[in-house]
Image 1 (spheres, rainbow, N blue to C red):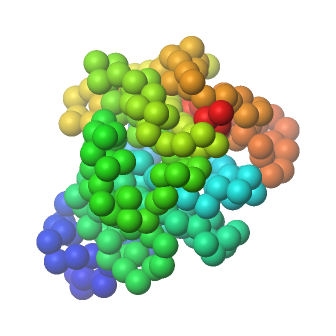
Image 2: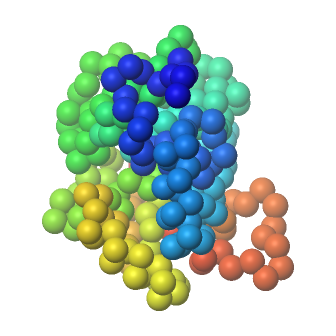
Length: 268
């Protein structure tokens, strides 16, 4: 296999990557045959997973566009994966070229790919860090070098906290992020839920406990608690397609089938 320019030499192309599997589900080009095979295996077990990932990315685009309309030009994207296929900097800088974005991920493969892809892209940076290490992230010199913490910042936590167990206090993580950013800052959050889900989704979650990255489904009440100290904007905490949709949902569409709740909130 020839190695494309965006795949650094230290990355094993014969092993699948979760970040590249996500890219494949989004219709991106930053993936390989080994990633596509794994993605198809996952899709055979949970047919809605691809639609859920695409719905999450569509929410990202709508939320980032709306945030720029509110005057936000700084973004801290936690658990960012590979920044491709309509990611934060593309959406934000299309709306306002002055926007700045810091991508943060714990996965060294995602970080390595991200640095290669974003080389030479103004107003962007990549940091390797764990979302649980809030103080390290907000004090990182790369983060501080690009983002001005005296001005509002949008903190994006889109589909990463459902990998954080209750013992690591996900609501506390969001609270520490709230304390780190100035008033006027915004939070966009997505987490998978067990509410309104069919039995096969619950069973798939049980299978995830056998892997190194189990998924923790949470109730609406548990997710609402993550917004403590923030003021939710309309339409509140809703299923992914219901957050400010650009077009009405099709007749018969079930927004709950996407299995995740999303919300955007303001620090007053």
